[in-house]
Image (cartoon, rainbow, N blue to C red; front, top):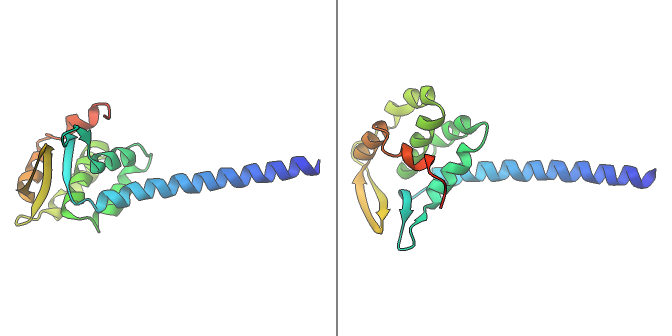
Length: 145
């Protein structure tokens, strides 16, 4: 009986530890997304692999509280991070997206972006317009590579 109690207690502790690790991992993806230095969707680089920013966005969007995580991260995001967050909010919570879209406009900032093998800088305002037009929506519908 004593052994059963110890095993049961250990199982509960491990389950709670696992939940804590999962929550930390979720928060880590949102934090890393907010800190993004580069904005890229689709295959990038010579190998055509998914960018870390897109990978982090997909991880956040897979959570039940994705909208809240994205909104919380928006306040301390880099320009590239803001763009990812706006793409995510547009996808998971259009009402929240509409509430914040005008508050993040940075007309004079350029953002480093990757398209395929090319890394360039584009105006934040231009990328924001592309998000409004839904040009990045399709990428999140595709299976990850």
